[in-house]
Length: 504
Image (cartoon, rainbow, N blue to C red):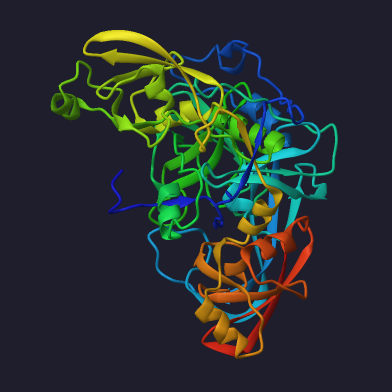
């Protein structure tokens, strides 16, 4: 995509804190509750098209609109944030302000959309819609409002799950995003510019599209925090999508959810013909993991992949010009290597689905959890063979990983921390302060929103002194959903003590 005339933008206010810390290993998939979503049936499209119209005539969108509109909600997010000033950036995040400056906190609001995916109140939206919010209000299509809580987020796919205290809700059925075709009609439902329950239509322009926006977001934040790498395999459409559509539904003519609208490409920050949605097959897996395990369970195949084209095929002297070339294997245990793959192999299918792009390949693998298997169809010097690969977790094992609650709380602050060294401790002790925890790297999150910068030393949490990373984790443990008060200073000005609070 030519970046000289257009920029890529997430469709709403955006910030991110990657949440991975120490982990707990679970023995299997049955250690936590089951997650039940509505599955789509497979009726013919004939009833949703105008059969009496001439060939090529537009489809009838009324059924899709009637089915999906009640299940799409308006999400209003608010937080107390430090005063900021606008800075220049290649991405326009629709009102998110860059260039932090110190000043008084003020209430800021943003809005987006969400999709009800289960009758008991689970709603899927974008991470950038809810990240950093202290209060979430959900407005239903019938104007009824609820307070919502965040169940979990996955910045690597920009997906989040929230929940409202309600039952018997109109949940949208998950469709098969693999089955949609380029040129097929789709409908986007959301709340652009605070215009609730807005429906637009277009066609699928492309599939498996990687646009680099999540990777750029990670790089712009310094990529300091550990976590899963960004995963992009968007459905591209020309359905009109604008700020506020983030987290809304992309549905097919049967009213089935095939994607979550996430980003646009535009020179102005408003719709210019290019919209992108996370495919529903990936959304379903990510949201299920968040609800069931508290975090996304990414399965790793253990190769260094490279997307082939005819030029690279000649360079590597392989027999096919599309697929995923195995450049090498990851450090430590490699699931693919143990299954028999070799450097120079070309992966052409994953579980029978053809792969001709790196984003699509990563998406198909990411739908599986550690311990599950994928069947890779490999072309090796012209010979075709299937290999069954049992995926690993990021620690190299095959167990399900559950994020520790204390680490979730700590990482929600959007920073990295370290214990003070002896010299830093001595400087504080001269100011009659026993110790503290130093902020060593910042990423957008709760601390950034109240004006904290790299080098800040947190000395107290809820009036209790903290002297190590371990102690601040303990202080934040079991505090999710409550108000937290912090106190701290900068080493160069230990006499200036700052106090601030936020909802964890």
